Length: 429
Image 1 (cartoon, rainbow, N blue to C red):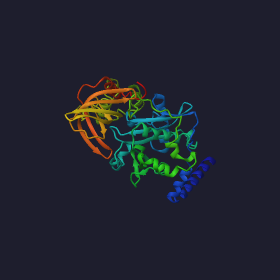
Image 2 (cartoon, rainbow, N blue to C red):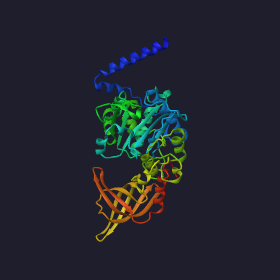
Image 3 (cartoon, helix red, strand yellow):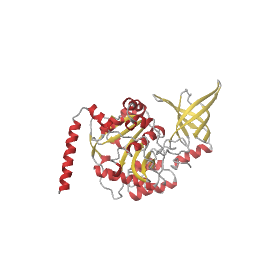
Image 4 (cartoon, helix red, strand yellow):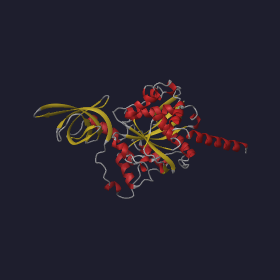
């Protein structure tokens, strides 16, 4: 009984303090949040941050996430003891983990736009973000083990730094978007300079068990200037500008890639089957359209053995691409010979497929012009193909062209596309 009374008293005191704090001017509240920052520039060597890629690592991430969401009322307990969503099944989602002495103690997922869009777009309008161009990533599934939640950010800030570094250097991201509980939104605004997508709070967000949510976004092309203006003269342990933009952490294990890809898919057929069929009926619960979209992504026999069958004819009639496009960012040169002479144009390829590619180019390329293209697919992977310009699109991000391959691609190109098709672009092949 005494324990219950003490708990009740603590809750009343906490509520009263929050009420007083909420009455302060916004700038004062933000100043308090920033004084609470504690980002160790030299984290304990026992901490390691990496992409979650093994069954054990992914399962530990999903269990920590489940327990945190259940405790917060964001989901009902699941028999598996894990929070597993359809977005985790996509190769465009990357989950990272924080490990302490080999034990997973924190996790966060980055959801790049894929065939199912974003979780938050069911209730928040992203039209304003899309108008600014650039790839969007939803930051989701953040959780830290209870044993490490009161360590002054010893796990949280390194986890956030790895997320930020991964998005800017490896995930080809311009915009971050989040959907968070109203109680937490000011932390993201004050510390990380997120801006709300809309003034109104969503009263019931289905992806979080009907809890209220606030949507927000951060433009990474502008964020460094914002961080510098606020944090540049603060001590190192409170200087998030230095921590995110200048500090290198030996604790972070960066992905090893054979190709200049922008994703790090880790789900083998066995892992896809284990988490999304055996541990949770996520795949079986999809409608035929979504099942068909998964079939279009995982289109090799090994994956199709574990994908759910369709009830109707959605796969046959759904307008899927004949050749799946894959995100990449690699340099290339195109040599065009015409009656007026020879031109060499520098390209930045952003998507490839078995039959063609898309690229940004500073030069004007006439439609239907044909030339030889040399492509650096990776540090030690060079391809030579012949291609024709078939489309042109202009935006504030540059001039983009679509190309189709005129002849059969060479072996390096075929190997690269095959690696995408089998989801094996993470780590060395």
